Length: 329
Image 1: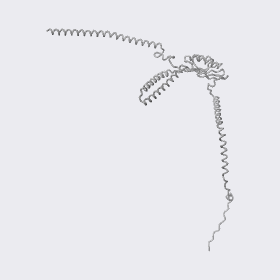
Image 2: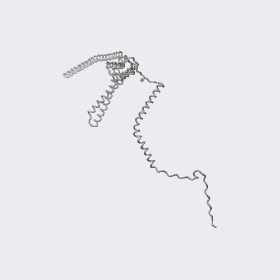
Image 3: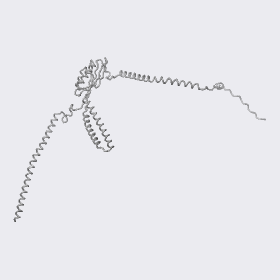
Image 4: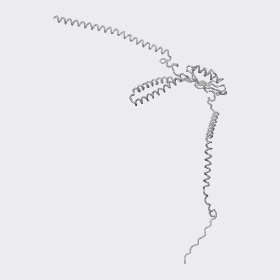
């Protein structure tokens, strides 16, 4: 009996312990779920706040940049533009205007690319090719126009932004290809593989150098604009730069072409004449001498036979009759 009571008490105690543990687990689960819900709610709130902040910032950027999304790419200072200007200015003193133009370009941070001058009094002119920073292009153009009376101005622009972006991407890709080829070259195990990989590395490096040269050329053209200015004296004419049309213009052009052709023919004749005299005259004398020698060696022909009178055209007489032969007695 005592053993049964002890077993019963032990079972009751185990049951109570199990019930208490189940209740504790249920309470812990409820409290965990309750604490997890606020955490999830706070995380969702943070995400929504972040999204709202991002949207708000994007809206502010869209409003700040003209053109909406991507408006910053449309700004002029963010694009690569090549400026080229051509102008003609008539001045009182061509040399002085040319010196002032060189001084103005040097002060603006540029340099003179070409300088062609003609100092004839009546036809004095100077043609300068100037390279100036792109941000000083308009200011230098206006300054050059103020040296005299501007007769002609032409400004051209070329947007090469897409070419620059494309070159940047291709250069980055090509550099990665060169690096990968170098890594493979470092792990080469045979002579054939080593030679093949060296050729591949050289080819990729040449392509990379070509792309980088194109990028430098575009960078030079976009950073330094080109201005071609022609200074003319007061008496200088622009007939060479104007296209003349009409009968007189055609006649003058034809006469000029004829004189040019005649000069060419006379030049060729003058070049050939010494050879003709040195070679042709002895050759002609040699042919003449051979002809005379051949004529001397030729024997005289037979004497002519006199023709009969009848053949000469006179009357032809009939031949005498032949007597008939007699027969015997």
